[in-house]
Image 1 (cartoon, rainbow, N blue to C red):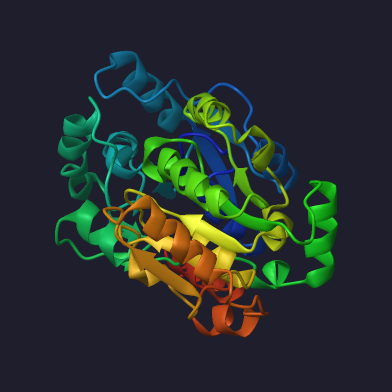
Image 2: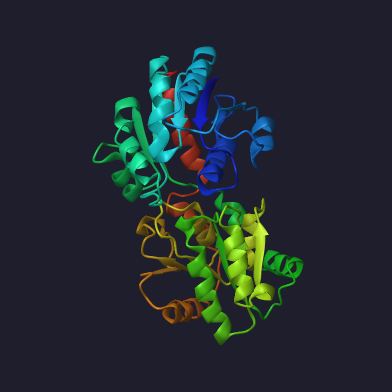
Amino acid sequence: MIRVLQIVTYMGRGGLETMIMNYYRNIDRNKVQFDFLVHRQEEADYDKEILSLGGNIYRMPMLNPFSKSYFNALDSFFKTHMYDIVHSHLDCMSAYPLKIAKKNGVKIRIAHSHNKGQDKNLKYPIKLYSKRLIPKYATHLFSCGKEAGDWMFNGKPYTILNNAIDAMIYRYNQKIQNEIRNSLDINHSDFVVGHVGRFNPQKNHGFIIDVFNEIYKKNNKAKLILVGTGNGQQEIINKVNNLGLTDNVLFLGNRSDVNRVLQAMDVFLFPSLYEGLPLSIVEAQAAGLPCVISDNVPPECIKTNRVSHYSLEKPLDFWANKIIEAAQIEKKDTYDEIVVSGFDIKNNANKLQNFYTSFCYGE
């Protein structure tokens, strides 16, 4: 059996972490087992499941490219833990653990791009510099999609690994829709807009609230479901309260049943500032939902005819009307479309498994 070290920030219920878990659950763990090197000390959402599946979790200090103690901790780890394959999901910052992995003789070092951009904050110049180092230390480059790979790897060849899902558990189901709406105290006649994503600048939650405010002005039976957590959540809660929308916006936090919560929605809203290939859009389409997204989201994520995309420069009222129009699209079972598009997890897990084992078993 091969043990592959997955390098992440932490295993919360974000898109890339959920993608890794989709592969982990569906790979043949008699042949390939995952261990995780995380950069947080606190327990995260998926930690217990990882342990139950036979994985190990190792904890590093927070990644700091200027910290000698961080590199010493990495060096010590790789000297005492032998791996043939490491797979890093730290986007621009993958260069640093891969550098130490190379120093310690790890044969296969994968850098995986999950985004076609980064937040333009004080760390942005450091990230731009760091991503240029990746080809020096990685033996293989992976990406969730073309735009994310082109942005991260600057013309170097890479392999696209689909952000695949278990399409079966997302199939549209009227009974589940009614159950979830009842549990959330949402009436059958309410108009429900939904979003799944971390509360960070990339996901553009402030815009979501502004658009929903316009929808509410047109339909006071409108509800907004927000799934996720993050550092920006309190700011959004304050905005909702100030607009008088407290009774109409549901903050559900992290959920282990996103596949069921999606059933309660009429339209999925996703106005991100940038993305790689968002797992949540694939999930929403698999649930039969019409989706309204920004044109910053790569068109590669469009796997059904139920997605429309618009510029964030368009007025809020324009967005509100397009979302209301999208609700006229009847929800339906899109399972076959997701499978045909190549985004069901079964075949993708086999491809990744074959990639890993080819280096050790010569398959």
